[in-house]
Length: 126
Image (cartoon, rainbow, N blue to C red; front, side, top):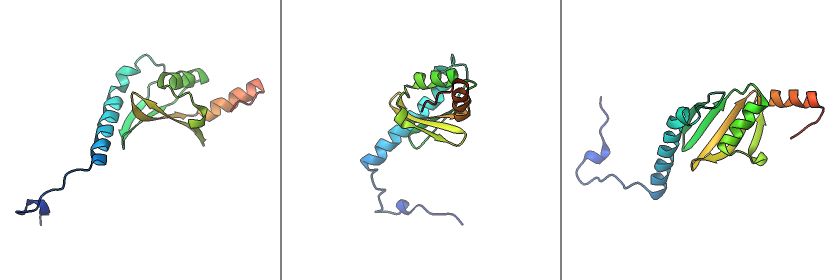
């Protein structure tokens, strides 16, 4: 059994997309372009990122080996606002905007790196 397209019948016109749908499609295309270009954009970074795009947002997942690697990623993406940082279990998530696209930078193991630094220095920072 095949499904019939209800708009194939005579006199049934497919509705025009809404402006919001058109804008979301443009955001999704831009996010996909940034995610596809990520390997070339960040070729000089010490830790490669897994980049993907969904819902008009780019997701970068990195596994930094040191605080320096993590700081370099946050500086590269312009994710410098500590109010946009969330520590969730073994990950740190930073929301920012990169190349005009909403971006999430996920650092796997960053909370452990921060706590090791705090124990070593005896100072608790953020």
